[in-house]
Image 1 (cartoon, rainbow, N blue to C red):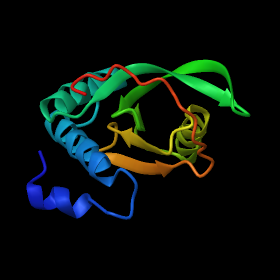
Image 2 (spheres, rainbow, N blue to C red):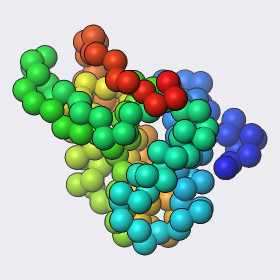
Image 3 (cartoon, rainbow, N blue to C red):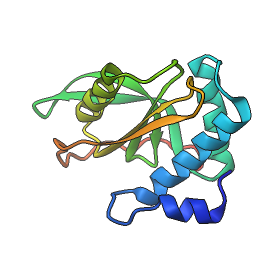
Length: 150
């Protein structure tokens, strides 16, 4: 795991949910450090779930999220992780993140109507990650997930 000094350097008070995203990143770095690259996405998903539990981070894995169109729910899609009911995390295990992956993750974030999301790629030599902000976020009351550790 990252040391306490590195953890506090990742927290930026001006960013919404910065402490949670720093914890998620710490868990992801630990998984990548331990496993390296080269596995299928599901292996990283399972390992990240274990690390999130070890660190006491509340999450739901493969959580079915509502998809909205003009404030009306029109379907659902499963998010890799819903962290603390407020942050979506999409995982990839590919050689390199490309613009299409970022666009897809932002589209999901908008469709889920969540303010903050993360896109992580375990398939590259070093962990790649992006913190995403939904500029189209609208406050709509959603049913809470049943978090593990939450």
